[in-house]
Image 1 (cartoon, one colour):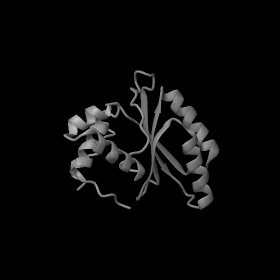
Image 2: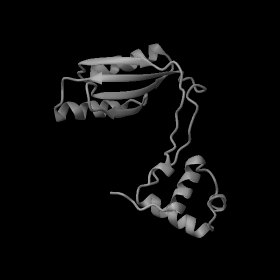
Image 3: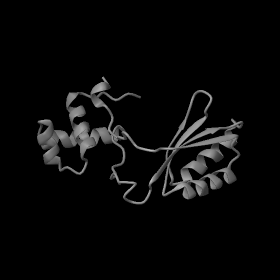
Length: 157
């Protein structure tokens, strides 16, 4: 279900993406509107599910999570029971920041953030003890070149 978003909504969303801790007055000033219409639009965007939960971005490396692995998973299992078990295992692991089911030769890709290679191995051992996996390839990110949670709102027209 697509939600109708106009230019003012896009400005509000862009302002919130940039810094959701801004006051309503500040957002209204930035988008060139008054407080009440901005508040009404934000409420409607929340009700429509366009705006989800609000959180804060943390610096993983400064908190000791220096290793980022991209984990490619191939499975020979495609039954619903295996998939439920696999998805439950992923959701229970806080190290998994992202998980995607793919088209092509690789079935899943995970983004895993851990302190070091030893911690990745503990994650790997725990995962394969919970679910049967045909093949796992782990790729260590040497450098994060770009990472952004911001959606390109101007491109979605």
